[in-house]
Picture 1 (cartoon, rainbow over the protein chains, first blue to last red):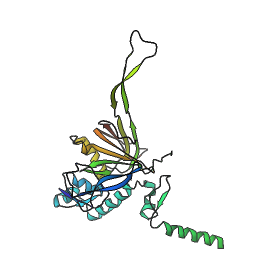
Picture 2 (picture 1 turned 90 degrees about the vertical axis):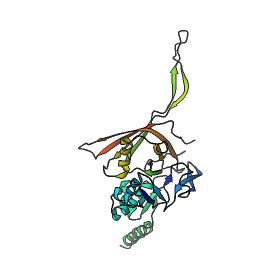
Picture 3 (picture 1 turned 180 degrees about the vertical axis):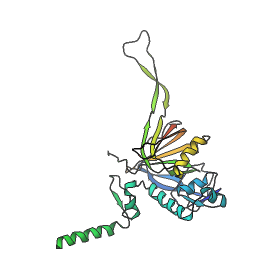
Picture 4 (picture 1 turned 90 degrees about the horizontal axis):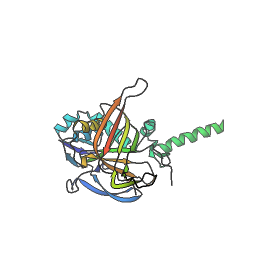
Length: 137
Length: 141
């Protein structure tokens, strides 16, 4: 049963000699230092009896009919799962799902404040406009 | 020195040689890790009861609670571990990522999974997962 990775940040957990071509070592900041961690490459195909679970998690898409059948998900659900996993991997609290989905924030700083999303500036601009109107009145 | 917030903490488990995050986690609790000791009082000893380390350490357990979604793959993957417990050490690896500035992670291998859920008319559907550690957690040093 085969599935194809649609993300490049899924940490590999297996013998390094296996899947050597499907994984790569990246330097990431962890435990206060830069460390080398092996990740699955986006586009890599895994052949595993539980690979349908990776599809359902939102980190893979089916790469053969068996996996597609077992995952039992429409394309739309796969897209939704991918989005949900992206949010989950950033540790987004359910209370902030709407703001994340609106692009206002993409995660949290260590002090709990938002890491601004691509639309955060737009939101700020709207705020500023309101302030301006109030001042005019 | 910092007071680290819990919001944003992630727990991941191994599925098909991949570490993937578990959704809808409410709380994570690690307990029971301790150095094993034995009591070595003797008839000719003093009033205080002495203890000595055996040279072994107990890893304890990691317990966590989730808002359970019976059809969610991440939650089904956990019950897969109960119905099919024969796993390699690699497949029993879990990882907790804290939401601190150092991006601290704590990895551990679990020996077995405990699972239970609660239906409560005054609450959402919740499940409790208990992971008995095989060895010690890799604590940040």
